[in-house]
Length: 415
Image (cartoon, rainbow, N blue to C red; front, side, top):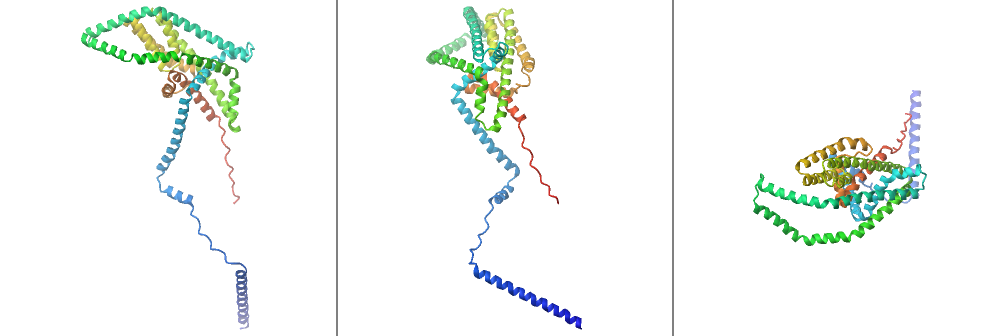
C-alpha cells in the first residue's frame, strides 16, 4: 500500500509541474502579443508560371513541340539568309571585283611564293612581277584568238550560209516534207521579229558601248585589289579577325588559313584540268582540219572554270562549228571526242587532281551555280563553286577542331 501511495504522489507532482509549464508558456505568449503590433496578413502564394507552362506543354504532343521548335529556328535562319542574299545583291558591284581578285590571288600565289622563297624578292616586287607576267600571258592569248577569228570568219560565214541552204533542202525533201510556203512564213516571221526588236537590240548595243568605261574601271580595280591581296593578304586576314572575341580569334584564323589552302588547290587543279580538256579537244579539232581550232580550245579552257555547265556549252559550240565547217560526219566525231574528254575529266581527272580536300557534292555544285547566275550572271557562276568549296573546308575545320567544355564534376555524397 505504501508503494502505491508513492507512485500516486510522483504522478501528482509530474501533473502539477506540467500545469506550471503550460501556465508559464501562456504568460510568455501573452507578453509577446502585447509587445509586438499586429502584422499584416501573409500574401497568397504567387502562381508559378513556369510550372503552369510546363504543365500546359505536357498536354501538347511531343512531336508537335519538336516541330514547333524546329520551325521557328528554321524561320530565323531563312530570314538571316534572305538578308544576306539581299546584301550580296546590293553590294555585288563591290563583291564581284573582290571575288575575282581573290581567285586571281590564289592562282598567282604559287608563283609569288617561288619568287619570295627562292629568289628572295620583296613582297611588293614579287607581286608586281607576277601580276605583269600574268597580264602579258592573257593579252598574248587573246591577241592570237581574236586575230585567228577575224581571219577565218568570212570563210566560216560562207560555209554557214551553205549549211542553211542544206537545212532548207532537207526540210523540204526530208521526212518533214515542209512546203516552200511554210518555210517562207517562218523566215518572214523571223525577219519581222528582227525588225520589231531592232530598237531594243540597238539600245542594248549602245548600253554595252557605254558600259565599256565601267568595264575598264572594274578591271583596274581587280588588278589593284589583286596586287594588295598577294602582298598583304595575311596581314589583312589577321586584321579582320582581330575584331573577333579572343576565344574565337585563333580558331577562325586557322579555319581561314585552311580555306585559303583549299582555294589555292582548287584554282590550281581547275587550271590543270581545263588545260587538259582544251588540249584534248583542240588537238582533235586540229587533226580533223576544223577552222577556229585554237579559239575553240581557248573557249573550252575558259568554260572549264564553270563546272558541269561550262564544259557542256563549250563542247556544244565546238560540235556546231565542226558541223558548219566540215559536215555531219566530222561533227559526229567531234561529239564523240567531247563526250570522251568530259567523261575522262569527270571520272579520272577531277577525283585524281582535286582530291578529297575540295570535293563538293554535284547537287551543291548545281545549286551554287544557279544561285550565282541569279545573283551576278556569268561571273557569279564562276565564283560560286570556289566559294562553296572554301566554306565547306572552313566549316569542317571548325567542327573537327572545336574544343568541348569539360564535363561538370559530380559530387558524390558520402552516404
